[in-house]
Image 1: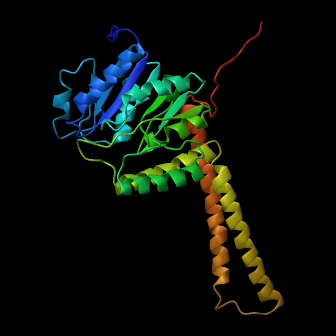
Image 2 (image 1 turned 120 degrees about the vertical axis):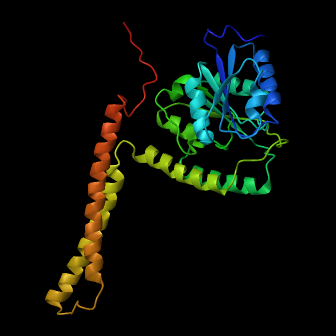
Length: 318
């Protein structure tokens, strides 16, 4: 079916970041359009050009239906996803890569899984067609993610995902955090599911995956872990660490004082008194940092007019 009136609200918003994908955009648009029309749902296609320096934008001219968002320069995939999501109007947002490795025909699988009550459905590239080095990096990242985040999905790096629009009402994406959106939304109580999807080898263009993205992704993973565990009360982390340091330092100083006063040992050439004082001061510093972080978090929620919990629905019996 042809896309419905552009002034009406579409059911699906397909968001795709592009960076130097001149060889893929026309075929990608055709496949997305074909898949959406087969579903019989109203839709919009949003391409976000992330500062491409090839003919990606030129190839997009004339494609219809299409909303093209152009960045002034390369800001990264996460920023492109964020811009596309904020411009979307659909009830369901579908994200995917622009390299033709994700298959738009799998959108139907995501939507079918959502009918089981999931707010987010992530694709699982269970038969990946990537290079060996990329697979090794991804396996290592997945191992760390499962330890730190416990998001219960196999493949957070798969960009093919379906979200209810409401998942992004109070979310801004930074760094490489698009990989951890399922973990972020699960913190707010949304239900996350997973379904196996196809994965095709790249034919045109070059992969943008490198060691820099691995490092950035790891740093953002730590950030998400901290937010999941301590976003409500950072004092529990910093204050607890401070108390532990303070107690260890205090015990060392008591031990040194006992040796000096009761055993008559000289402390002039021993390092332990300095270690004890250092631990006490570190403990005080950590505790004060926890108090300040606690105040900042409360101000964050207050300024955003956002609670540190999410209400799914309210049922009123009369």
